Image 1: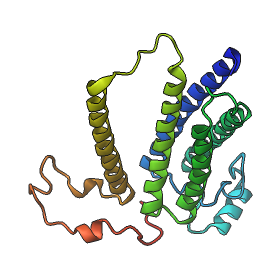
Image 2: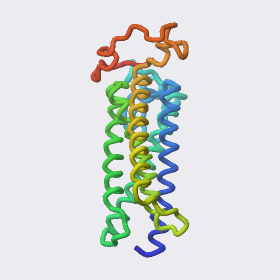
Image 3: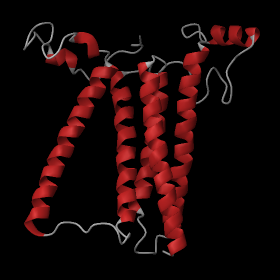
Image 4: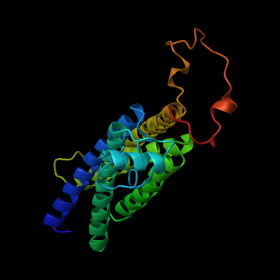
Length: 241
């Protein structure tokens, strides 16, 4: 790959990484501000793609079409800004995948990772749709969170792979020291993934305040718990506060 093409690809990867971080933060903000169902349909919002009902007649029509989700402009705009950011990210990853495929004959061009990212973004869009149409079903909400963080991680990996060709980048550790460090890193990554899954599941089930005190839980170090009920994957629809 020529130096110019490599620089363009590397720059776009950095932009995609930064945008992914913003989209993940927007998703968390939407979730924490109870705006996950601010738009009851998908991909539009009350049947609109670029604006919201703002006239009295438009609002009345939207409320009649979705009586269970009356128009709340503040929540709806939060959700739409999140969707716009995700849409921009999807287009950017599509460009990265197209560039990678175009330069696939170059041995220095990563191809599998950009294509995997494109597939992941496509699946993320489905999860985003199901999050709305299945009304914040916990397993879907948690999957959407994991998909976003996986996208962030894969883009960071792609940035680092490109950065290996930078002469200022440190070379990897060799021998037993590198193997041991890699083992600890994988263990740390596994623990981090488990913690993220547990945190996402807690949030998706609105269970964060089940323990109002810390480090105990309802004054107990080991309170009564029902693990089977807590980790039932397929719960009913319409859970939203």
